[in-house]
Image (tube, rainbow, N blue to C red; front, side, top):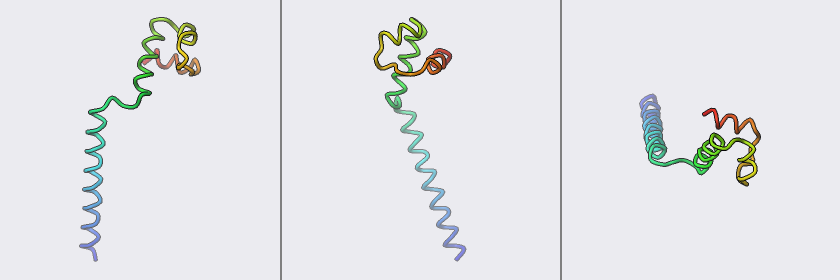
Length: 74
């Protein structure tokens, strides 16, 4: 009974490691969600033009000012 449980545990851990490796490979080779691209653009525009200008000229920037300050900080 213990050998069956040990084999099952080894298989589960091995599959988890394979899944982790695949997830890391996908994360390393992709840019991410479109949110990452948009937030990068927002932070660039906020740094160059400021919060008021961004609100006036970007209909996609519908976030509160605290988010804007965070984006400028990072």
